[in-house]
Image (cartoon, rainbow, N blue to C red; front, side, top):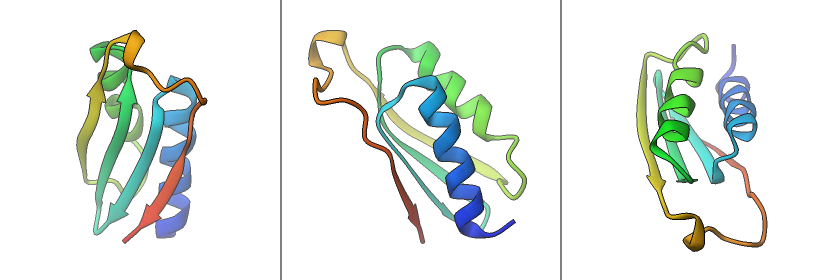
Length: 83
């Protein structure tokens, strides 16, 4: 699986969990998750979902949990960065 394939698969997982501003960075087996979620449950679910992707050795979960009133109202943005 290529670096881009891994990042795209992780992005699809984040999209299903509704992580606002979600983005993934992948390099050398390490997948970094960034963005905002409405709950710690969603943050943990995102991590658990992507850790089983082939090629992912470690997940660094930098997703921030923010109160619903602080959520962006412009919708969700997903961005893939492959290092």
